[in-house]
Every structure is written in structure tokens, then in C-alpha cells.
Image (tube, rainbow, N blue to C red):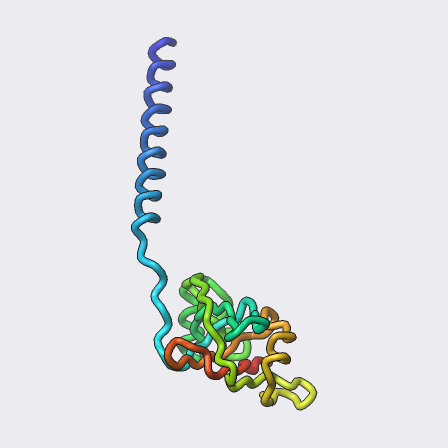
Length: 158
């Protein structure tokens, strides 16, 4: 019986040592992890998590993603065990949860969906963007120039 207790203690200590080693290794990796890569100038699809246009120049928190359609969307869904074919022939692929705070140009072009016109993006101003429930939109295209958002377009999705 003592031998079983000693064996159980040895196994428990070994497991504890392995868990501690992994925890220490994970902490080391986190400390040395590179900061998230900045978005390059150009047009990017993603989700806007929040908007603060009260300060100057104003900011938005952006989660870059990929808008996939057709075969690319179906392959992405199938690889994850999701329903294929995908609904409305499109889906958002978002494997990187990195959030980026982007400055918004004071004269940024803003296009938001006008659902009363059925699916048409119309020019909007900063106040309308600030008042919009951006977290419930399907997605946005944000155009960056010199790292600043100069155009924000809401993406239509049925």
C-alpha cells in the first residue's frame, strides 16, 4: 500500500512539475511576443468594435478580417466543420483577434447603409458614424493613408 502511495505522490509531483514548466514557458513567450503588425496603407475589411469621435482626430477600434465568397468561403467553412455551402455565398474569416486603434481623418469619407433605400450606402458625417451601432453591422471597409482612416464604408449583407 505504501508503494502505491509513493507512486501516486511521484506521479502527482511529476505532473505538477510539467504544469509549472509549461506555465513558466508560456509566460516567457508572452513577454517576448512581438507587438501586433500595423496595417499597411490601403483598403481593409473588418469589424469596427467602437468609435470615439469626440476627441481630435477621433479613433475607431478595428478588427481586420477577410471577406470570403464562393469557393474560398466554402473551403474555409468546410475546414472548420461548418455548414457548406455558406449562407449568402459569403462569410467573414477572422482568425486573428488583434484589435487596432486607428486615427480617423477629420475629413474622412464615410458611407453607411441606408436600409430605407434598400441596400444603398450613402454619404454620412462623423456624427452619424459616432451615433451608429457599428458593432451590429456586418462589416466595414476602412481605407488607410499614412496610417489614418480616410474612408469608412459599411459593407452590405442581406
